[in-house]
Image 1 (cartoon, rainbow, N blue to C red):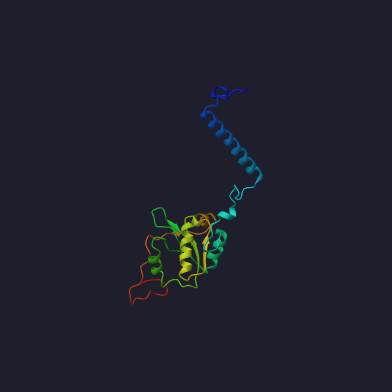
Image 2 (tube, rainbow, N blue to C red; image 1 turned 90 degrees about the vertical axis):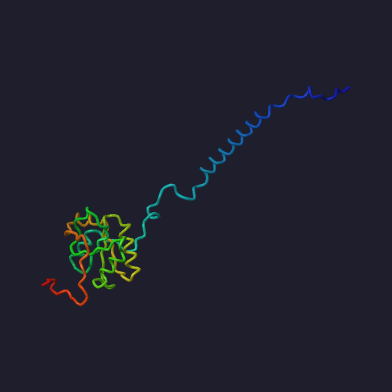
Amino acid sequence: MARPWSKADSPSPAPVPATAARQALLLLAISIAVTGVRWVAVPPRLSLQADRVDYEIEYAAPLVDAAGARKLYDAGIHLFIDTREGGAELVDTVPGAFVIRASSFDDDMLALLDTIVPEDKFVLFGDGSLAVTNNIAARLIARGYPEVTLLKGGLGAWRAAGGPTAPRATTAPAAPADGDAAPADGVTP
């Protein structure tokens, strides 16, 4: 006769925590293997190296190197604009350069209202970083001054190329009083 089944005759089951841990490790091993195979088999959608073209700054105006700016200066058909903020360390500039700063753009433009016209051609320079200079160039273009060029390397590159420098005025030149016209020869009586 067949013996009836009893709990004592069956093998004892593995403890639940041990089984769960084995299953978790098995799933982890499978997911690592699948990820590794996919990583090797499928090329990445984005390159892992930065492409210089992707990260180039789009400037508001074309760039000119110091040698090219020197030719423009010698030709005398471009006005030079110093975009550096005032400070004790700023002792020189390009001779004849006007000052337009980002922090006082509107006031500087107002001071130059009778001096510059939209048909003028400008070369903007700063301290070597084109961030502020580009900002001012974009603002000039938006105000109707389309002939703007940025000096690559700023005043340091200008000096290195042998460009002349002159002491920078600490304040803007005073405008003539109403009714007083400045003499044509620039000499005041």
